[in-house]
Image (cartoon, rainbow, N blue to C red; front, side, top):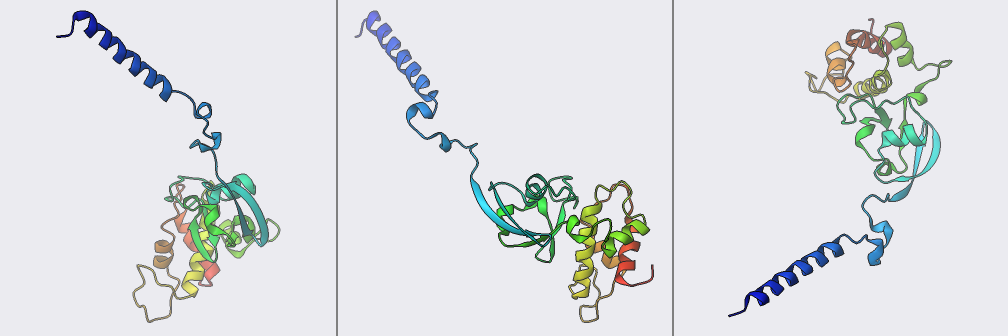
Amino acid sequence: MPSFGENELSRRDVMAGATACAALAAVPARAEGRPESAGPDQPVLAKVSLTVNGQRRELEIDTRTSLLDAAREHLHLTGSKKGCDHGQCGACTMIVDGRRINSCLTLAVMHQGSEITTIEGLGQPDALHPMQAAFIKHDGYQCGYCTPGQICSGVAVLAEIKAGIPSHVTADLNAPMQVTDAEIRERMSGNICRCGAYSNIVEAMTEVAGRPA
């Protein structure tokens, strides 16, 4: 049978070993000879080429950068707004290769070579796009925060209807597509206006579509 002293020595050995293991685990990665870049917070950069509002732009960005942040923070195109950052409000809507998307939900590196239109590319104060002019005429903006996304979405919606792309409220898939209030409201439902200017937005889009408001 081991003596009391032998048992005591064994406990000390166990404690010493555990302390040494804990100290080793706390040693920084650099001290163990691993490269500093192996840390999880180090960005991975990638080059991406985009055509934004008709102009070729070359960027080297963190691969985690959203298309919205690339436009706002790197290209300084701040018209597109960051609202919910979850793809639920539509304030960040851009037109990418002819289709409207929530730019906060897609990575910039996923759009290599894409053609992107932001609100700045639709028109300027001295040369407004018809949709911009109609929003002003019908007071479809109020506070204005959601307006860039609303206008980009509105332009894309009318293009969808013209192309004959149906929506959930399209009654007859074989008949020519009509620009109705129901079609506009259904297709624009992903763009939220907290000011409640929806009726004015419908009127603006209806005018642009060529139907009497």
